[in-house]
Amino acid sequence: RLMLLFPYQDLTRVGPIRSAREYFVRWAEEYGGVYVHAGGAPSALNELQTSSMLYQLDEDDRLTGEHYSTRDLRYPEPHNLFVNLLLIRERAKEKEWKFEAPRQSWCFREEGSLSSLGQVGSLGKIRSPSDPYEPYEPFPSFSLSFSFDPQYDVTFQYDADSKTYRRFYGKNRLLPHTDQEDGLQVAPKNLIVQVARSRLIVGDTKERIEINDIGSGKAFLYRDGMKIAGTWKK
Image 1 (cartoon, rainbow, N blue to C red):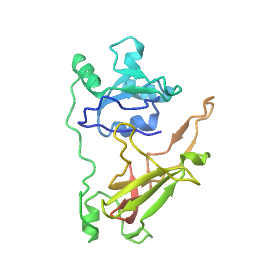
Image 2: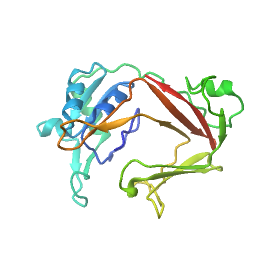
Image 3: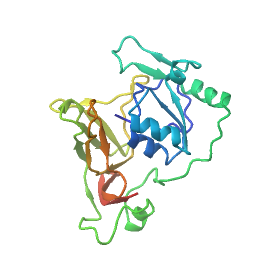
Image 4: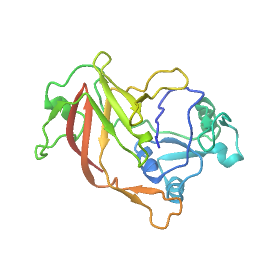
């Protein structure tokens, strides 16, 4: 699953919208705003109801409020729910929700290359003198596995001309991950990989997982075709 943040974009089609997960709620609370979802795990719904940082919109206010989502019947459920961000913002105004200015968590440079650890340090605690890793090393391509099903494997390939990491999916045959609306390939400039333990929730018949994202662990920053090793802490 993916969680996307839209601080200002006025898009009329975003999705597919899925159910909430507790770790996503915790991460969204770092920014504040409206959390849009379609149902969710009991722990996530409890977290949303008590959150002081988030307002929630749950699939057209649990199917009784104003409509801001539609189901695209060309796709099977639950992968066919899409929302209109313009209508969501209008819904927030109707409810007279008040929002604080978002906190600036990360300060990435748009262009340029790595030249000193001082610049890397401006990103926060991404490097510690006690870490047994090299400060940074050339790393133009890498893959991440999220599932027992290899079709969900993700590969990022660095493009030096645009200074971006082009996203692909699949195992034996890499397919470009493109946006349905404009056909452009997903290609971020900065990537952070946070390593955290996960496990099945005991007694959950739907085999949902929980992620141990409170504490500390390894982290890797990929930027300008380089890999920087460090730590995360929360």
